[in-house]
Amino acid sequence: MNKAEKMPLPLEWKFTNAMTPYEDAVEFMEQRVADIYDGTAAELVWFLQHPPLYTAGTSADLQDLVSPDRFPVYKTGRGGQYTYHGPGQRVVYVMLDLKKRGRDVRKYVFQLEQWIIDTLAEFNVIAERRTGRIGVWVTRDNGTEEKIAAIGVRVRKWVSFHGICINVEPDLEHYSGIIPCGIAEHGVTSLVDLGIPVTMQDVDAVLKHKWATIFED
Image 1: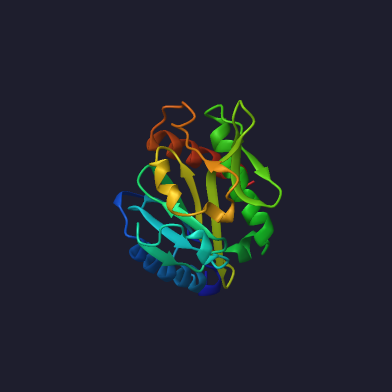
Image 2: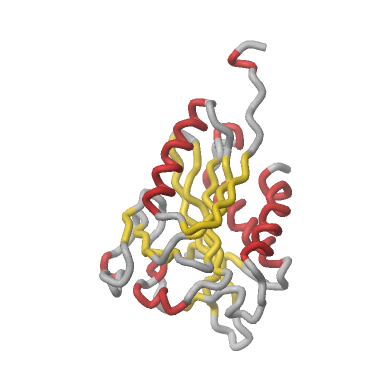
């Protein structure tokens, strides 16, 4: 078997328990994306948490940064506007070679959304897409809609990075320093806020279990 015919590397799963500084995560992703493109590293799904911070996507409006001095603010190359990361929020960075997966970014984003929706369904949470609104949403008994998960994707040379975040049990008050994703008329929630006492490990197990039905079929 020559170099051009070598078997593809199997998908790698990475779990980081300690809080990961945002700059370190971006540096790691940048290198991993380059290595995946070169064929020297496997695709990677990385589960982590960040200390409290705000990120500004490529569409961020400075007026949506309500408290600029509250937490560190990082400009990032992912799509979207302002979002919050912090303890109690499961961040999953997904680095895939989309050349091998149809070169379809819209399909990939749809798959990420479905991954979240199917995962939350295992906890009896009905989560849905909303036309014109990025992310995944739930509807309270009183009819109010709140965001429970965010998506921010970047693609370089058909290799994806950044990914998703699901609110398991973050401090929701930390969101008051921004207008999340530029949407002021709707709030944010979490699994624990909805009265579902799950752990990060519970969510991780379901995400990993649901992966194949979304991304490998």
